Length: 221
Image 1 (cartoon, one colour):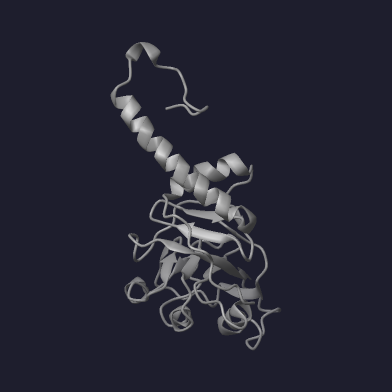
Image 2 (cartoon, rainbow, N blue to C red):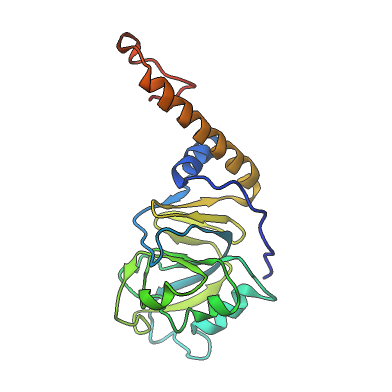
């Protein structure tokens, strides 16, 4: 699958982007409680996906259920600047990869990775150009606990559905999943939200206590 470079949108906070999507759609779009070896860096790109499930000995085939195979299926002819989204099937305390396996993201110039599972080797991952957000760090390999079964299918991360082609935008606060068809509108609206918030800060500074309880543009401030 070739996703191509995604158009660069305005840099906004994930809070503003979440607020913007709240005006455009009713489904959950945010993923909480993620950590990163480089939390000051923003992860941004179009999603490609790999789905993991709990290990089954009677199903497992080493030639089929290995990360490399599904990684290359996911990137297809090339997926530079994409974000690899790993669905853990709720196995949030299990490692889905580490510095060696995930060096493929660096080699193929992916923007990074998002998952609610754990990753190993934060020190090594932190030296890559790719940006990683996950459920936490671990030292135990997860190969006996989970196995990949599909590439470029819908996955669920932290209770949020991620489709191939969605825009992933993550910072130290959260990750936000933007449907591709809403991307331009969502990022433009998020920039408007940030401008509104800046104006609200000024109005709060000068507010009259007798007017407390009123709302601006339907937002309680």
